[in-house]
Image 1 (cartoon, rainbow, N blue to C red):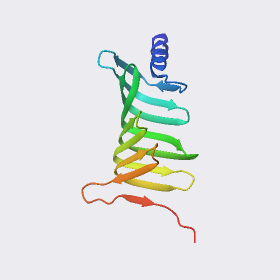
Image 2 (tube, rainbow, N blue to C red):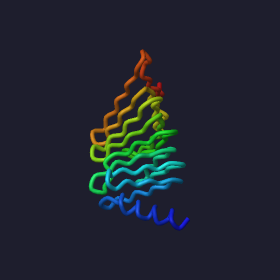
Image 3 (cartoon, helix red, strand yellow):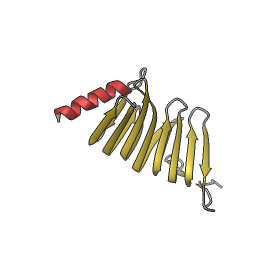
Image 4 (spheres, rainbow, N blue to C red):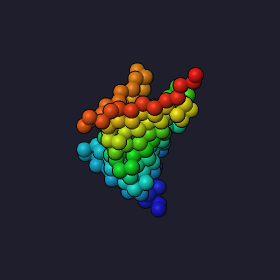
Length: 152
């Protein structure tokens, strides 16, 4: 238990950027400093402000000891807040590009805006937080799906 706490504290130090605090929890942790990659597995949870990412496996790619990309697999789910709206999502794979502030959900992609119950479904959903754009892509002749309510 003490070893796990030391690892988590070291990990928090590595992932602290500017004034943003990132908190990471997992049952297993592997760090390869030479290749600048971390692999976490087992009930993985990542918190950054009010955003939360959960999965069974998370690979974090780093450059100069700073995270540049997160790739979550195996039951990837998330909660993000944009413009005071809460979004829940899930997919087979969740990729977050830190500098670009872009989320990409691959395979069985789904996002729900909780306040309005708007829903997006597709094989791939890309959310660009900087430009406030969304793109839904589907394959194999399956349509992208957008569900929303209209007040009449």
